[in-house]
Image 1 (cartoon, one colour):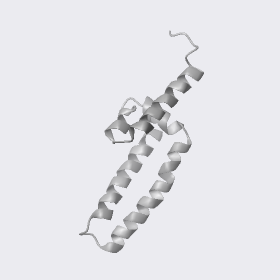
Image 2 (spheres, one colour; image 1 turned 45 degrees about the vertical axis):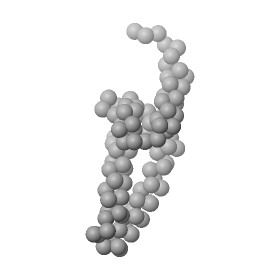
Image 3 (tube, one colour; image 1 turned 180 degrees about the vertical axis):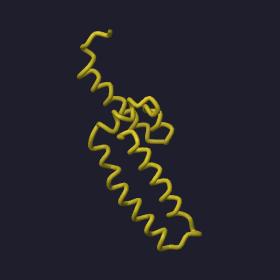
Image 4 (tube, one colour; image 1 turned 60 degrees about the vertical axis):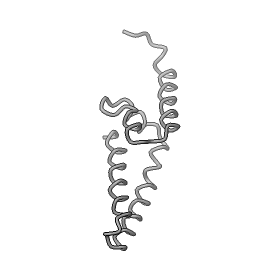
Length: 99
């Protein structure tokens, strides 16, 4: 389910970050967590390569763009996502009359 990808990646990143910065955890484990974060982020940035993740999150009743606000995403990214949604609506749906 596309709407679960970004929250799952955010959760994974949060958990790995906690390990990375917890001085009570052995250094090799913290290093492994840091490499895990780096690997996850290589894939995470790819979600920006396609609009489908933004559309899926924005149109999901439980998420909408509020998810990104609540997760403290950059305001510019949220504005860009909103603009992308409006542009897609204008391009594909605005010409049809409302029922």
